[in-house]
Image 1 (cartoon, rainbow over the protein chains, first blue to last red):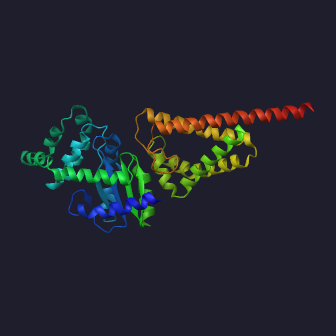
Image 2 (spheres, rainbow over the protein chains, first blue to last red):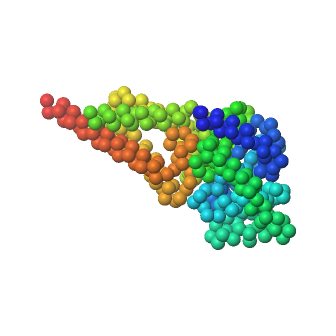
Image 3 (tube, each protein chain N blue to C red):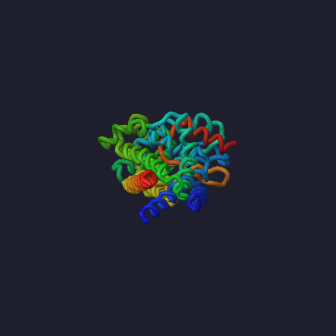
Length: 193
Length: 143
């Protein structure tokens, strides 16, 4: 219980930093907020991103009932995950977070094998944007953003990816794993009721 | 003495497992079950609703010690199912929440070691309880 309360305070205090970010979807002040800690190289995160979160976005985020926040939590066991997180955060600076994160998850099986992240990015970005992205990904401020998300996750505590911290009615509930939308939707409905 | 220790240990584990699940919405436990990706939606919801009360009943049964052999066998059977699922999921390389005592414990070798130990304890308790029961029946019939 203490852990839940602490994670709520941490996430709430860190949230304003993301106010203008593409990493926050939906309006502020919703009754339910879902913070997703994911690793671009984790298969479960890909499954959650491309399934449950897509449906959540369409049904609840678009209608302003749920806010969705993306947090980077690259695991040390995945050699290209941190670089992918740096690219995603850098993409946010040029307004391309969603495009880049969708592409990274879509091509996960390819770049996880060969480490060629830039080949994936080149498919969805103009050459000028890709050049900007490469420069920005080396910016210490971008690295600091990734580190801040990791630190936030460690304190929550996030033990695995994907983990969602669902905040509603003043309480934060961690939910781990690639859960199906049908079950997740039932839970969201109880929080909105 | 050993039987008493095993009985109280397992009773504590089952009661704590039941408490940690019953104190929150059954849907939170349903999401833990769902993350294993083994059951359809209706089965996930059924298990999420019935398993915690079942753990509570077994925990109370073990604590009281009444009809011990039945409760010990039930505890062993339940732990055997849990352990098999955990082993299977870990073998598949799934990075999921164990769901054993609520949310927040990643499936790891530590989880397997703990559940394996509990399974062995329940197996031993079941064996001791059945043997004691057989001895009691035998002595009654020979009198």
